Image 1 (cartoon, rainbow, N blue to C red):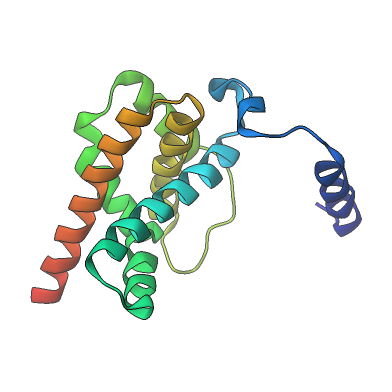
Image 2 (cartoon, rainbow, N blue to C red):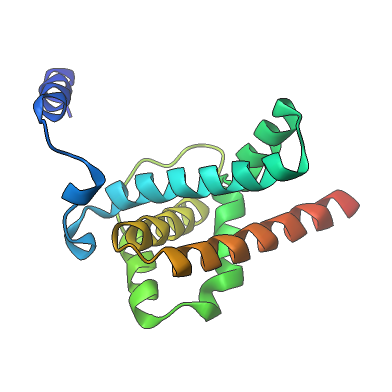
Length: 155
């Protein structure tokens, strides 16, 4: 995308007066990367909230949260919860995983795609207002990630 096109899109997005959560479209029709953006935010908030309950040190919370929501850790967590997902949830993971996007150097292509799939699932559950299921999966992912990090520290 050219920079001038990007600026026009930004102007158009800011010019819209609607755009509250109630204006979100059908979750099944939304761009998987938009769902992933929402899902990443939800997971980051959840992780920071959990960590804030156990530590009052901002640097500790930030460092642990950054690792917990990294693509590498999200890919591991997806493996840990895949067996718990419904067909519909797996479909959302696949939608996100198969969407083309640029991959950072901090993760392999497979890890990044898996992480995007997990984030897409979280975003999809959020938009569908499936709060109970979203919280259940966030908890399972958090626990799996925490345990994996503890095991890595022991090794």
